[in-house]
Length: 293
Image 1: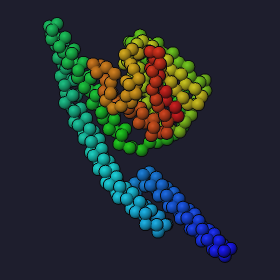
Image 2 (image 1 turned 135 degrees about the vertical axis):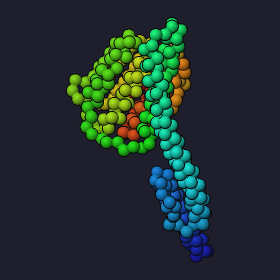
Image 3 (image 1 turned 120 degrees about the horizontal axis):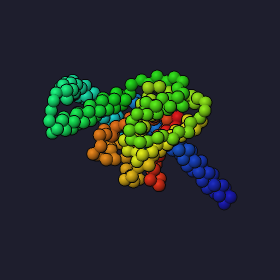
């Protein structure tokens, strides 16, 4: 009887050890699949998932994932190709529109020098206004296509304080026209970061330009030593949904104004490409745009 009991216990121990070994290999296979899957998503590679276990179910799972990865890779390549073709088309169209626009502006200059009636002068002013808006749109489309073309950035030591001051000074005339006296609070010493100087200036310029266009008459700019810059201004007719879309391409708060809706989108792309963060908040009637490097 004791012999039979020992035999049963032995068999149970063997079964238990076999199950533990099975669980161990299954867990290891699952971990291998998870790590390989994560790597295939992060890298554009043709290498498929392979696992060390011979378990048919886990190998079947790996094969199913490989099938989906092949489909995903094909879709990704088609998307990249279509996106590249779209950007090239936008660049070419923007370039082609520049020539007739330049000619139109030249003829407008000549017409404005001629003696005209009040109605004609008023019509010419409207044509000039719409032509300038079209020029701005064309230039912004061209800049957007360049920014999104994954052009190589050139990191170098950039003093964020100086860059911010220079951009604020460049908008001095536009701010005065809107009756805006900016309030600034900047560090006394320089704050250096390894960034692309041209991209930094484009980010600051686009954010300040947006404030000039939509502010209700004020602008506040603060910067901390940790490289966090906050632009804030009072603005009516905003809500959380609108604020959430400020960085979307072609989105404008008011469609009637001369705006392409690309400025903040470009700012976000450049900020993230340099490892920074940008976000917008709306609190008690004020819009806050925070950029940190």
